[in-house]
Image (tube, rainbow over the protein chains, first blue to last red):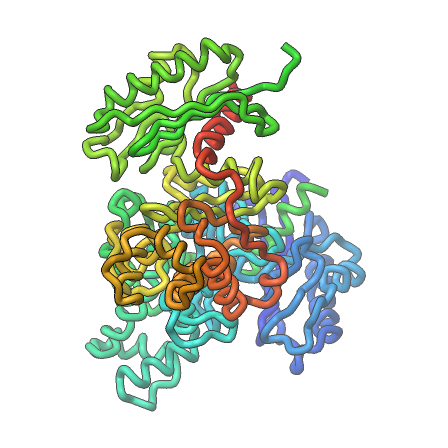
Length: 308
Length: 308
């Protein structure tokens, strides 16, 4: 075949299993999604994922690799999911092997936020950069670090937990054990709880509602989003001093809150950063939307396929 | 010659210019120091450094390279010192060229704390690790990051400013522009100022004095050192979540304060870290003492000599 190489990426979420077939230049040849089995049992998840992949492989038999993005801690050799907060009972699940047995193809595992970061780096907001950080604002706050154009995994595969950088060592405790983590201010449920307090309105139940209010000109909602942005910007300042990146990409649901959040981020960075670093930094919203995770998993498949 | 390759390293400090001739296995063949010219004028500094190097090169003519470690921001191509807080008026000083002209040899520049980190990684406390962070507690708090066994410099050469990670976004302002940086709690003068307050004793004028008091059993001094350690440990926790390192090396004068400081660091990490990261981390005092900077500069010379 003279066409481009392509791979299949799977994004394992608590609600959906998404799949994308993606070429080296980022063209999406196919996209699917199925519901994650209720109960999220490992065998049921593997079975459903296997069936989805088998169908896709019938249609796209030349896939050079299969990548799977999973929430939680993926081990350094990327064979297993060490633990995953939203998949109770998942401890050292050999998902790579479980899927490879079903589809008779090489399979590669990666953390889901790392996949998001990879996709945004290769085909999205961070394209062309060598040093990029990505933050994904969702239920939790995830992170990914790109160094010299490559995903940085650390000594045991657990690096890039940028949501667990603390902005206040005496702040509220985070489930991770640390205090004042940015996840504790920007993770969906804490974001909403803080909004209820700051807007003195218990009827606020979702980040989208705050965004809607801000868009319709509600000054308190705008101010709340700016304030959350400032917290994020304070963390970004520390990250700039540590990494000296070219670009920080902000994605996930909350990144849709638009201008007030980004204004807060930029304000904090402006006030807090070394002037020489400030000149060069770009803070950008993610570009690829909800399929970034599956696309990044396909990138893992493309890269791994190369080294086979 | 059948002997080991060696290089010359220079550590440019506000008080002394130190030099070390070091082999690939870390053997120090020669060490010298001269006083930094009063006024710290760039031409006077270059002249004195040139004279020192010329003498050393007469005795060690086979040096494969010369590395210079300098405080301040070194540019990405490592030709110039962009700025240096303790060398007033130094803006874009082409120190590499100024020295190369004098000694007729290739010369390589690096940030001084990066040199410290390189030396501790290659021949000191971090030996054998692939992922290492180093903190140098002195007038300021400097940092170095080793990734895959290599110094990490970032997109413009300014990475690794670990002293400017904030532990409290509403904390005291740091000269860098940020608030609550660990430098603002552990840099010598702030460390002493905080001790005066906490020990309600204006006669404390140096970190060494607090260490002496702690060693002689003064409970307030011990508690103060532990508390400073906890601040450092809180920052280390964020750094572990970000980098997933194998080892964090703590050096500089304050690291001599011994057990209470390290106890505080370990306590904070114990309380705050992901349990799976905690199992694997080592927090170690630096090993190479005051010549680490010059030795690391020699490592820069050795590495650069290789690629010539």
